Length: 291
Picture 1: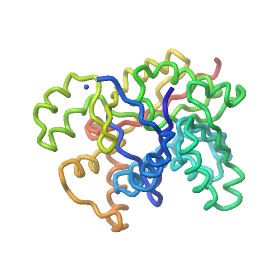
Picture 2: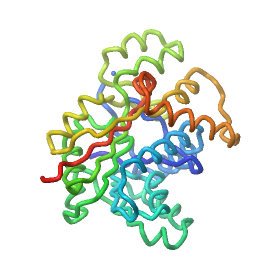
Picture 3: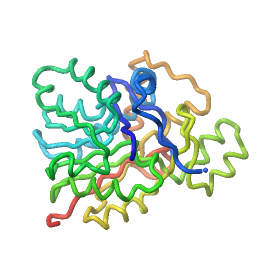
């Protein structure tokens, strides 16, 4: 069973690093202290704010006009999906952690009443998503920052696809297996960097656990087996992560610089070779018209 993770937006707060050597660990997101640190500390970083801003704008390129029905699997405190509710979409956040959903409820109370009415919170493992949502199909199913914590993502991916209506999209953000040597190299951990070239997993900075990376082709093949074709993929954390790992200080209070970074990251996320060297990638798949 996975534990729910979350995301965020430029004017909100971001996620603890999720990169992709050993078996991926499962952080105990049921621990209120960890859930609080995840939301209050991790979401206050520049790279988290930028990452969620970039994901939000990428999603808007593929979502139908509001109101669309959106399921956020492993949505945690709902930093990615609440902005969609504010934009007029009907969102359902599914997460197995009561502590993370408590964080979501606290944040939900700060939204306008009309946006609150468009949000539903459900406690369930992602591997049980279809049953938890009573077989409902959604226009979009999100799963961001979750796959890297799973030794085998196949059961979860099957559920994501099962919950997507024909013509709908599946949105997955996960660690980039092709760039796992960069973070330790920037920290001058040369032996770790050398090992990371061929290792299936790597450290997840900030959590003290290890996670698994994915490739665009590998993830696309898993989705295709369930009738979901890759429509487009983007890079995330193309520059800002590497700046942080290299020791360059970034001021999250400097809104002008954060906005400038976000603009550069959004542009780089759509272009080669930049998106290929991002620490994570965002894949959008579309379900075939017929099941």
